[in-house]
Image (cartoon, rainbow, N blue to C red; front, top):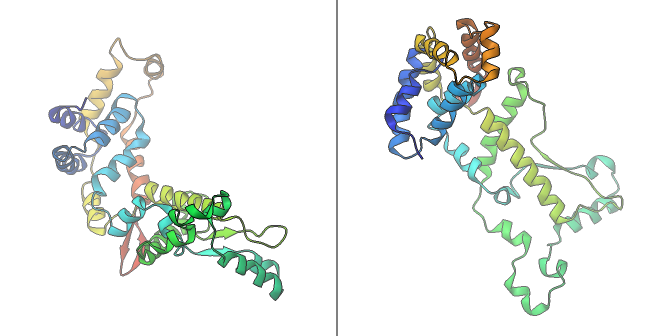
Length: 285
C-alpha cells in the first residue's frame, strides 16, 4: 500500500542531506506523488533511514536532480536490443586474423546470407510465408543511428574517467570466427549484441549524465547536514525494537559523523558529468 504524502515528506525531512537539497527534493517528491510515481522514493527512504544503507544517497540524488533526462537517453533505456541491430558498431576479428581474400569472401558471403527461421526449424514450405526472416525484421525498424551515436559518446566518456572506478570494456561488439573461418550462428550473433546493449544500459543507468543547470543547482544547495537526521538516528537507536546489529554500533559508539556524510556527497559530485558545447565534461569539485 502506498504511503501518504505527509509521511513521505516527514521522512524526507529526516534524511542525512543539507536543507537545500531537501527543499529541492520536496518539490520533486510532490510532482512524483501527484503522478503516482512515488514508489522509488518510498524504497530509497526506507533503505536510508531504516536499513542505514547510505550508499543509496547517490541514487536518491539522481532521483532529485536527474528527472528530465535527454531524449536519446530515454529512448535507449527503453529500446529493444534488436532495434539497434545494423546500427551498433561491430568488429569482425577475422579481419585481424587473415588477409586471405578467399577466406574473407567466404566469411562475409555467409554473413550476408539471410537466416531462415523455417529452415532452422525444419518447417514446411507452406508455412514459410507466415514467419518473417530475422534479417528482414531488423530492416523494418526506424533508424536509430543518432541514438546509438549519443550513447557511444556518453559511454566512451565514462570509460575514460578514472573517477567512476569501472572496468573498461569496448563499445563495439566483437565477433569471433569459427575454426572453419565462418561467422557465428545468427542466434549467437544476436546474443552477443543483446549482452553488449544490456551492459551499456547498466553503465549509463548507474552513471547518468546531469544537465549543467541541475548540477549548478545542486552545488548551490550544499551546506551542513540536516540536524533532524542526527536526532532521528539517536532516537531510533534508543528504541527497544532496535536490531542487534544496530545495538552493536551503539555499544561501540559508532555514530555517523558530519564529515562522513559530507564525503558521501562529495563522492557523488565528483562523478557528475554534463554536456557542454557538444562535449562531456567532468564536474570539478
